[in-house]
Image (tube, rainbow, N blue to C red; front, side, top):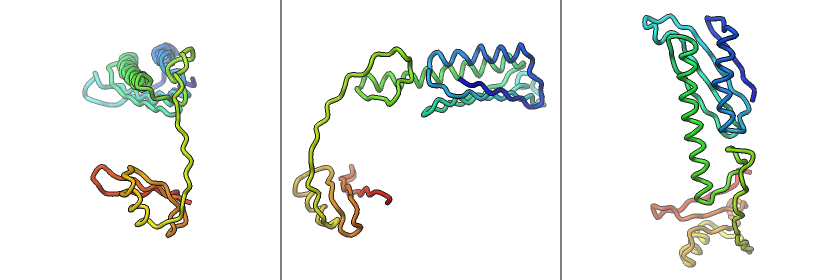
Length: 179
């Protein structure tokens, strides 16, 4: 995990840098694919001493990006506050991934831990289609006649493979490739 520290209006002491590394380095234990963590500390001129320092943290984990910001009376308090928020976000994200696993969804990468057991393999039924050229009206007749939720055909109007599907509101939708 790469940690990028920046500060605006203040010089970070070595003690503050170690504190940031220690607090935010813990996130890597729970979310293994963290690529980069950006930390920005800003000292602002406010009337309230309790909101003097602002800590912003952005965690980039490939497909996952988490962001948090908190204020504090000192740099260390602001870091502690934002570290709690980031830990909650990581726990929430981890819970979502575990929920997907328990429902049988698979993820491309196991973001939780390197030693996790592989998911059970899913069974797929392969159907071969004889895709015929037809108009959207003919495909709509076919979807009605066969009582299907979707129908795959070669659209004669656009000369593209097209998916016609029945929407929940009773209407139809078309999905076509851009090229």
